[in-house]
Length: 64
Image 1 (cartoon, helix red, strand yellow):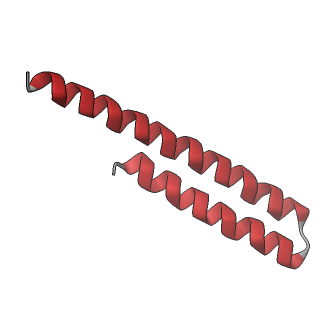
Image 2: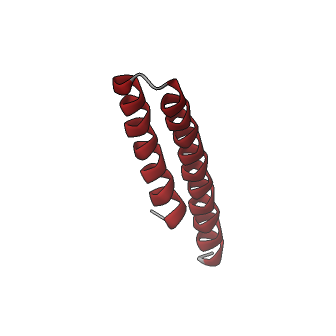
């Protein structure tokens, strides 16, 4: 797991917490911010997945 994957997952989880907190307190603004944070986290996590895949390809080609 690389740094982007870890940070992305953390943002996603924090966003879920923020969204649920917004639901509990009746704040649509906090819900929206939580959803936005989740989306940002998922994008960052996927960017980390792409980096991992690229690293694997480079390593694989180096072993040939």
